[in-house]
Length: 525
Ligand SMILES: Nc1nc2c(c(=O)[nH]1)N[C@H]1C(S)=C(S)[C@@H](COP(=O)(O)O)O[C@H]1N2
Ligand SMILES: [Mo]
Image (cartoon, rainbow, N blue to C red; front, side):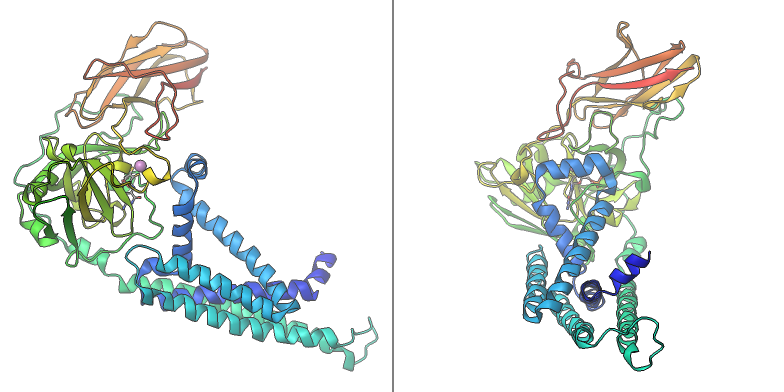
């Protein structure tokens, strides 16, 4: 403890602290001023987003596998640590050689500015918060470091002499720590103020709440009785909005004013089309239940959800644009630069791919794409479900690559047949006797016709299927098991509407979706 305190009094440690305080000023000033600029343009969000875009495939998979939907929190923690360490180094460098320190800070500022202005839909003026933050950081760094230089030339106070004069270094140190502390606290207040200010400025949530969804011209088919698995513990057939999985590259949720929203349909078309939100409200909307699934979902995973979507069939929009011969793909792009490649014919056939504005009777939640997203039955989200969509380019697979395709994923993504066990949970302990096994299976557009369960090495046995609502929604199942004490393995597999049995070939999510049978180990007591 004593050693640590002494070390903290060393000029190097104090210089490092000065660096950290200056970094806190850079970020918080940018955050505060950034409240008046595009939300995605503040340094932390922009750096994080840039980092995500450059994340190699193995790291993305590692992050999703390790942190699941907490991957964003993990990213922020990692960034925080990196910035902290860099700030320490820059502080020490500035203390040793001021010019070099300044160069380092300017370089960091330049990196942040580049990462800010290269974000999609960000204006060059959005660099202003970062520039002002960097200037403020430099001033603070200078103010904190300058006394340290003077400190160096003062004689150390001889220990316990009671002398009055030589205690000046101690006083200056105390002053330094007070100044650094006040700077950090001030930065915290400025950053919090910035957050509150941007929250207050954003009235998107209020506009969303006030939005009255129109009644669909064609209502969703009634959900038949018995879609829910009778096994206790199986998730709800219809996923509430708040429980719906969320996967996207957006570190801060794009905030789009519905009145400003416009969709541009262009490319290989006879007629360029522009669509406003009012156009959508006025159109003949349909409502239908569709199960969305993420390609990153591991076998047995929960990156899938089932909701009732309200929207306009994309078919209708394409009819007005009249795609030219030779076009075979639509590249949909979101306001923040994500894109998906969807086969043109899938958007034209009768599966009712839509531009959705409603989810389970509410306007789309902000994080699920407000005001408009795509929903395409049968395809993984990364090639179809573009949230905050603003652009549809009719093109060809040979000519354009979507966001994830550029990063090693497939260019097409039909959903693979999958069966999942939800109860009992993996490694659960269950009492001997009758145990209800249950879960969900999906093969959107083909449907599920059979689910089978295998206990240990016994023959496969048919599970009881819950009622089927449609071919584009998931289907639940249950299985009564007479459990005997000891460890047991429960395996499950589904058969789709074409008669094909789910493959036991294990595949990773990359590049086009996981496959294989889920196996759950339970202990019966
Ligand atoms: N704008 C945008 N849309 C996106 C994505 C994204 O990163 N950005 N991710 C896609 C992926 S990979 C999936 S699985 C679905 C998930 O939709 P959800 O978050 O509403 O469940 O959104 C798709 N749409
Ligand atoms: Mo996904």
